[in-house]
Image (cartoon, rainbow, N blue to C red; front, top):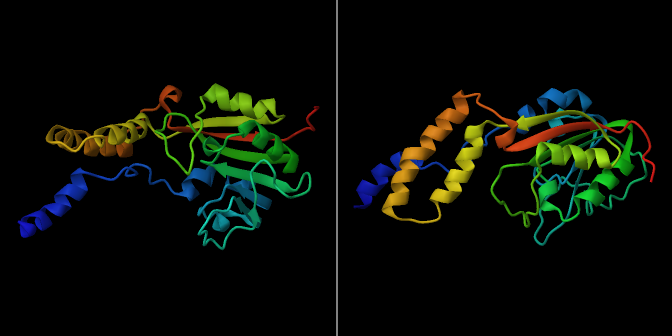
Amino acid sequence: MNFFLKNLSPFYSYFLPPEDAVYNQTIDSDLEENKYLLRGKVLNAGAGWRDISHLVEGELINQDISYPGDTRTNIQIYSALHIIPVNDQFFDTIVCIGVLEHTENPEEIMKEFYRVLKSNGHLILDIPFLQPEHLCPTDFQRYTKDGIIRLVQHHGFSVLSVQGRFTVYHTLYWIVWIWLHQKNNFFYLILRLLLLRPLIFASKYSNTYTDKLASCFQILAVKNQEMIN
């Protein structure tokens, strides 16, 4: 029996892929279009383990909160995002990818981003729209395209572009994967075999996209004037 199961393991690994199987885009491709903005003093806000040092021409400053057992050595600023201990107009560019949904106070954070960013400095912000809950350690909100534009503009930024990320098949895969792992019975196993691998295939080769079903949005904004309180 063990020999039989061992020989089946490649079959299972292929037809029963992991939760993140379609989200294999590197940070390089995520930032490629705006790489030219990663110059001067660059803040990697809510950096986690994400390394963008190879993309930055200038000084990279990683910021994040600390937690028990934290072994990271790449964080220069430990603070909450709404209280970043630097002077006004300190950074040339702020990069914040997949962070804002995990915060309780995005309005305060956007106000702080505006404070610490230089005039004519840029904000590159990735925020989910249609994604399942993913705790890190909390998960508070999602934004539509209009919602993220409103949030950024409300705090004095001018929006240069908003782009949806990933196809409808990326969105469907994650949702379907979560759904099909709610139960471990024969029916759900068959559905995994039938649905997951085709969705991965479609995510690789289809360009079917609509903002109505975007997995996330990336917004590029500029601080071009002082906000009047």
